[in-house]
Image (cartoon, rainbow, N blue to C red; front, side, top):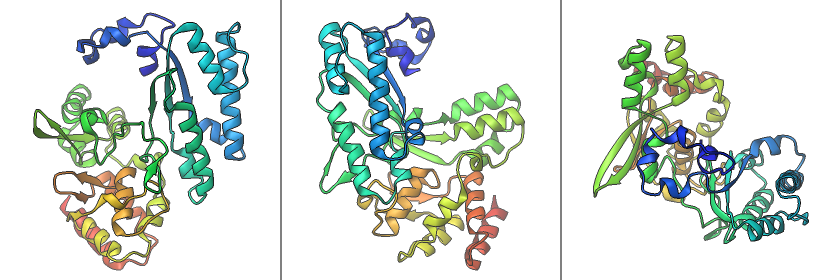
Length: 338
């Protein structure tokens, strides 16, 4: 959708004329005005043996595309120089769309040097470059910081902790789910019990507004099948959750027990290092679980909870092979209340 809006290869106004964006003052200013580069970083990682290999293949592929589009302009085999040359000739900036930008952090969880090389590449390619109109990256994790600085501090971040003005676009809103339930003749109350529970807060006109957010994939599966079930495990594995809640941090096990019993737990998200290994406390683990979708986060009170039946089932799966008898009892008690 972003590529269709920004890309200048064809007139796509018919796609957007009835959508909310067409009411924005800047709508025409940016419609079909840019060269667009789309990247799924996971694809390049999957075909690579190392981070050096991944970045080499990525740059080689992008340069090939640039030479194909601008054969008379691009002569350099360096990505940055090639894009600078194109911009100098066309005066048309690039919009760069990167999906799963953080996949390398999940694949190389323990390798700090690999992570740093990747961030350094992104910084050199994107930061303070005249040819970049917009760089838009999607992923699970916030941008990794090293020491007191971030290599990519030119980005504005929108996350489950602080979605800012993008809060209503993180998933399906309650109104959208109600409309889907009406269209497909499904129970809204059952849909809400299974897939609601994420609370995204934003300040609008100096007032706090909280959006109830639903998991889009699970809602779609339930609407199409008519079966309310756990669709989470089709995209994630409970083994990952199990590994995190088993970690040896003071208060972590007690917090998990409280959460599974239906209580809420207050956390400090400020110490989280934006990766999947540098944990210093219980709060760092729970903050990661918020980013992964295993916990909902209520920003005004800084508290977390299990959002719904679907995610609760993932905790059941995770602890079913663990010697946590008291946790199992808490789960059974909470399930009876649902």
